Image (tube, rainbow, N blue to C red; front, top):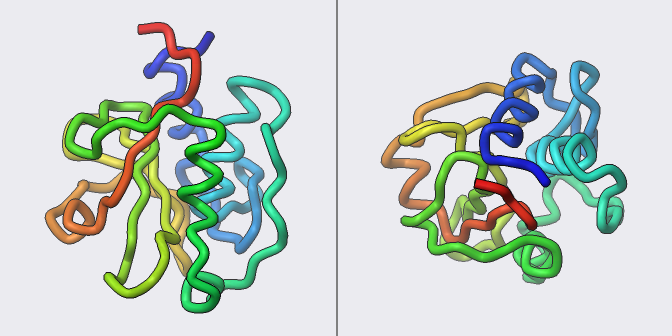
Length: 144
């Protein structure tokens, strides 16, 4: 069973990985979902489900909360304000759109994420990001 330290260490191994839409490979390329998928694979083995293909603008069309639904199926919901290191944060970047960004909390006030046009980075969970957190989830079966 993984610990929060294991999760953060796995996420930190992705630091510097270039952004690649739909990617999920450490060092080769990943997007925000791919980061979470890659950490899951490292800790648990096979992913619980493989996401369908998605376009870069998928959050602007359709209105279906795919990320929230998948996270609810496989992870443990926690209150966003009670998220600890190792928890997954879900963001709604615009109030009228579906949630379409993920990060792994790495420490108080810090997160690891992949953002288009950049690489995986550990950054401050600034007020701009904090205002957009709409949900948080813990990986299952954590040992604290």
